[in-house]
Amino acid sequence: MAAAGNASQAVAFVGVLHENVDAVVAASEAVGPPPDCRPGCASCCHARVEVSDPEALRIAGHLHQLQESERLVFIERLRAKAAADGGHLPHGQPCAFLREGLCSIYAIRPSVCRKAHSLSAQACQSGMAEIPQDLGRVIRCEVLVAGTRDAYEGAGLPASRHELSAAVLAALRPAALDEWYQGKPLRASS
Image (cartoon, rainbow, N blue to C red; front, side, top):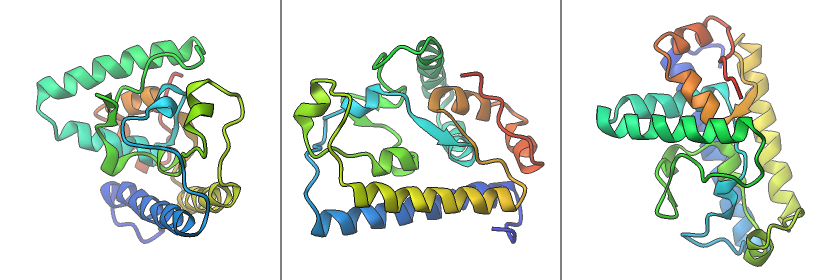
């Protein structure tokens, strides 16, 4: 991590976390109880999602590559979601990146989304406070997240958690990437 040559490489490092979380998920699904999640099941996509500074910057980089009209649609959805989450509405609006029941940024989705799962879709749909999960999977993924956060912070780069929509909006600011690389955390308002 300390050898990261520039801001873009430092942000790209979070992709290593994502690959490792995906590997833990695949390994746990091969031996443990299968999750009850299916394509189109988006219960968890209506909950508050938190991302690290580099994850928000990675998503913002993706949005910067889109056509302006498409980017503006996402920005409006991000603003609406950030406003709803700022009011602490439980299970409010869907994630700004949810389209027709599927994640539109699936390839670069945050670690919390990658590890999210339920052993009971019925528990999710009924809004149960406790969702049954594979605890081993959760713990192994959290260890990876904590280690990555420590690596970033050890290199002087902020990696704290923020609400997804507010963090991506903050990361879309023109100076956000350079400021972060200079050690300033994202200024997410939610």
